[in-house]
Length: 315
Image (cartoon, rainbow, N blue to C red; front, side, top):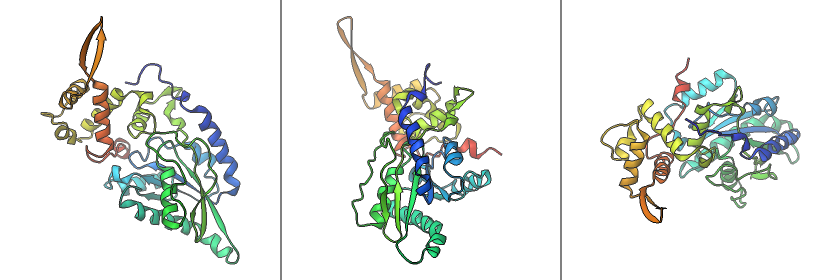
């Protein structure tokens, strides 16, 4: 299903390697580690190196971001499964979009302050400050979290960290950013570091890579938009998510991605001109149609985007 010769280790290897080294170097000055991950894939793609290299002996919590896209139906089961697995001491759900931003900021700050309560009692007198290391794989919303907390709990410029929909915007561990005045809390933004679980026996795991691709944790061009669209259609049908039938105005559900993309291209008049043998010809642009299909999914037009139902169903 994946393109021949796909090699993800060539995608930003230098800044990911150096980023992990920089994170480890900051640990002596860090009071708490917060892992940010995508709530649509709570089990897929989490980097086990964080647990092994960064969490030991330090308070840490897992913040599952983008619940506006994942929905809330599975949150309790997800939290229970993560607690049973021992990979997350504390799980917080939220979103920094729209009306959810302020509520999520307060929930996350509540958990951070509770983490520091013991240290606050010990340091009653004098100025005390706390440092938080924010970690995660690419494009899960680490920089957005810092900006939202800073906007909510300080009078400083909220746009302290660059954000965007493309992975790889943050390329190194930043200088610490103040996110709270009382207590005085600083956060370090860090580059996204891909999970080593993408590979098993030196072979790429398609399920992990494709889910990461659908959630834009990997660049579309590394995998291919038609490959991602094909996997999205497969998941929709397998999980009984048939909202795409009405959204795309299909007659019924379909497992033929070629048919779906041609239909979408015709509906939206997505065409490209190609010159063959000196003569201009027009063809349906299935790449643009695939991008359209992916965009509908990512904007929530095809229903909630929780992708780890298969893992959640496992005993």
